[in-house]
Length: 119
Image (cartoon, rainbow, N blue to C red; front, side):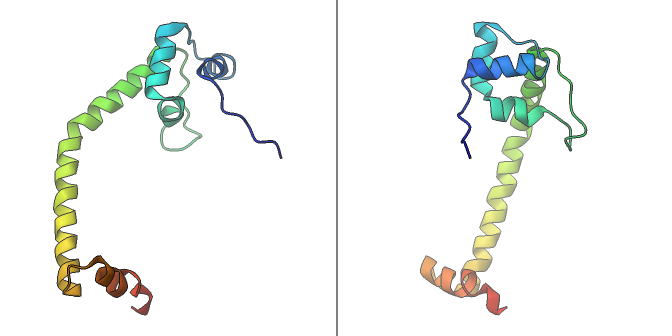
């Protein structure tokens, strides 16, 4: 079995043009594709929910608009998500410490993580 070699950014742009029908060209759009990443950028926004709900982009600027909207939405919610994550970690840690009666990770691992199958 022959292993596929990674495509260069130019090859990815050519693929988007020739195979996906997306108008993309020039150093400015190349730089944008490099900044968002092909796999995180394009591949992350190819469809909604499932592959059969594909989005038919015709221009790279359309993809960039979706990417930028998503980034702004994430930035809006990020502080609140981090606050919830920190609180959840604190509560979980409190329960773990109270169950193990030790501050040693080895004890936590042996009593709660390694022995979970006994429960």
